[in-house]
Structure formats: structure tokens, C-alpha cells
Amino acid sequence: MFAQLRDKINFAKAFQEIRNVIGALKGTKGPKRPLHFMHSLAKKMPKRIVIYAKDVENITGRKTRAARKLLHRIREQNKKQKDAFVTVKEFCIYTGISEDEVREFLLD
Image (tube, rainbow, N blue to C red; front, side):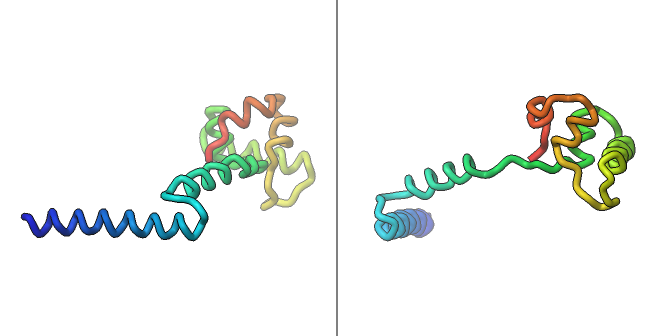
């Protein structure tokens, strides 16, 4: 039991030492910079501009097949190929729902 406890303490010390070395290499102490850096990356990620059948299901409450048919009709109206993406803007124009409302329901 004491050996396991000693191993856990040694691991914690080694882990802290690794964090300090990484921090020193990056010019900071500890993990604050990497966490802050990741947070700032999340803010800069652009929002999705493509809408999928699952999103249409979530927004309209329709079944999968009906959502796919709706996307198919939008593609036909915009003279797109069968496998082309449908943008959020195209979906909003077709359905008359505002873009802000649609973006609230988009699944990540």
C-alpha cells in the first residue's frame, strides 16, 4: 500500500515537473498559457456555413427522409448538383427562417 502511495506521489511530482519544463519552454509557468491559447482558438473558429439533414431535422422537427427531401428541393431550386452542399443562407432564403434562429439550432 505504501509503495502504491509513493508511486502516485512520484508520478504527481514528475507530472508537475514536466508541466514546469513545458511552461519554461513556452515562456510561462504551468499550464495557464496552453489552456488560454486553446480558449482563444475556439473563439476564432468560423461558424459552419453548410447545413445537413440532421440540422434540418433539429430545426423543423421533420423526420430524416423529409429533411433530405427538403435539402434536395433547395438544391434543385438553386440549380446545384445532387451531391452539392446547401448553405445556411440558401436554407434560410428557401424556408423564410432567419439566419440567427437557424444558427442557434446547428449541431456541432
